Amino acid sequence: MIIGDLKNTDEILDSIDDAKKVLVMGCRGCVTICQVGGEKEVALLASQLRIGDKARGRNREIIELTIERQCDAEFIEPILGKVKEVDKVLSLACGIGVQYVSDLGLPTPVVPGINTTFLGVNLDTGLWKERCQACGDCVLEITGGICPIARCSKSLLNGPCGGSADGKCEIDPDVECAWQLIHDRLKALGKLENIERVIPARSWATSRDGGPRTRIREDLRSISREEG
Amino acid sequence: MSDNGYKSGSNLEKIFAMGEFAVTGECGPPKGSDVSVVKKKAEHLKGYVDAVNVTDNQTAIVRMSSIAASKILLDMGLEPVMQMTCRDRNRIAIQSDVFGASALGIKNMLCLSGDHQKFGNHPGAKNVYCLDSIQLINTIKTLRDEGKVMCGDEVEGETKMFIGAAANPFGDPFEFRVSRLAKKVEAGVDFIQTQCIYNMDKFKRWMKEVVDRGLHEKCKIMAGITPLKSLGMARYMAKNVSGIEVPEEIIARMKAAPKGKKAEEGIKIAVEQIQEVREMEGVAGVHLMAIEWEAKVPEIIKAAGLYPRPSPSA
Image (cartoon, helix red, strand yellow):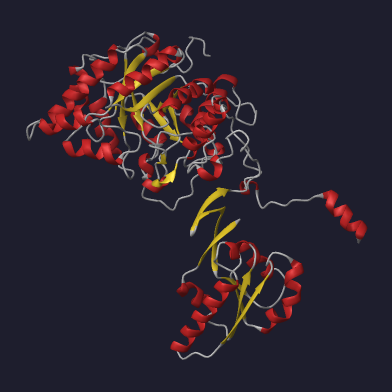
C-alpha cells in the first residue's frame, strides 16, 4: 500500500493561511490503513487547527469529510458541491488523491496535508517498510521475492556490494542488506544459481526514468465503449 | 586486441605480462582545483609504483574529478588508474567519460559501485546506479573488445582500457564473496584490487577459494594494504569503515608500540603484510593505499624489497 507521513503543523498552517473556509478531506484507502489520512486523523487535525485558530484569535470554518477514495471519480463527484463551498481543500490523501481532486478543474485549490513516502508494508504496530518502487520490470522471480531495486540502497542487480556487514547495509545499521536477504532466501530455496551469473544491465525506461507512465488496456477500453 | 597483443598497453598490464609482482598506489584528489595537491602526492609515488589509482569522489565527498587528476598524473609521467563509480553517472555519462579518458591517454580504470552519498558532504544528492559495478565492467569490455556502446552502436576509434574492479573479502555474506568475484571475471575484469587487509587469516581463506576456482588465472589479484598511522586510525578503521576488519592482535600491536613509534610500527606491519601476501598463491601484486601518507610509500616499497620497479619495454 501507499504509505504517508503527516506534514509538520507549521507547513500545514502556512499552506492554508489565506483560506477562510477549509475542507480537511480524508481518504478511506491506503492512508486510512497506515493511520495518517483517514476519518480519525481528519478529525484530529481539524480539531488541532480549530484550537490553533482560536489561540490566535482567528475565526474560520474548518469542515471535515472523508470519502472512500480520492483517486476515483465515482467517489468524488457526489462531494463536488462541498469542495466548491470552501476556499481550500487540505487533503490527507496520498499525492495521487491530491492531484486527482486538483485536476477536476474546480477553482478551489487543493493542498497536501501529508508527504507520500513509499510503497510498503505494515510489519508491526507503527512500523512500515518500503517494498516496491513500481519500476515496471519485476525481478522478484529471480531474487527469491526480495526486491533489490527498492530494498538495496544502490538498487544493485548484482549485489551485495562491499558495504554489506553482518546482514546490514553500509548506510545504516538499522537497514537490512537486501542482498544478504536475497542470498539467504535463495540458499534456502536451493536456487543460489539465480545470482551466480551476471544479471545484465536493465532498461530503466519502464521506470519513472522513461517519463510519466501511462497504461492503456485496449481490451477494457473496447468493452467500455461497447457498453457505452 | 591491439597489434602488440596487449588489451590496453598500459604499464600495469605489461608488468603483469612480464610476470612481475605489481605495485599500485593511490592518490585522492583535492577538494577543489588545487593542482599542487595532486602534484605533491604524485611526486612521492613517482618511480615507486607501477600505476596510481585516482579516486572518484571517495566517501561521496566532492573532489576534483578523477579524469582531470588522472590527466595531471599522466603529464607528470605517472600512470593513472582512473576510478569510476556508478553512483554519480548514468550509462550515457559513463561511456562518454570513458571515451574522454581514453582520448586523454588514460589506459587503466577501476569499476566501482561507489560509497553511498549518505556518507558524504551532499547526502541530499540523487543516486544514479543506472549500472552496477559488474555491469560497468561489461560495458567497458564491450567498448574495448567489440567497439560498441551498450545500445550496439559502433564507436569511433579505440577505447583501450585495462579493466579493474574491487573485491572485498571481508564483506558479507562471506560465502558469496568469491562467487561475486567470479561474476566480475565473467563480466570481463582484468585485475582486482582488494579492500584493505588486516585480517590475514580470512584473506587466506578467501584467496584459497579464489585459487581453487581458478579465478587467479583469469584476472590478476592485487592485495590491498593500508599502513596504520596511529592507534586511533586502527580503532577508527575497525569501527567506522564499512567492509574493513581489524583484528584485535593488530590493535594490540599498535597499542604496545611506544609513544612516538606508533607510525613506525604501522609501517612495519604493512611491510610484513606485503611480504605475507607475496608468498600466497594467486596474489599478483599489492595495492598500497597510504591514505594521506603518500610520503611513506618509498620507504614501505623499499623495505618490502619491491624497489626498483621494473620498466617494461614498449
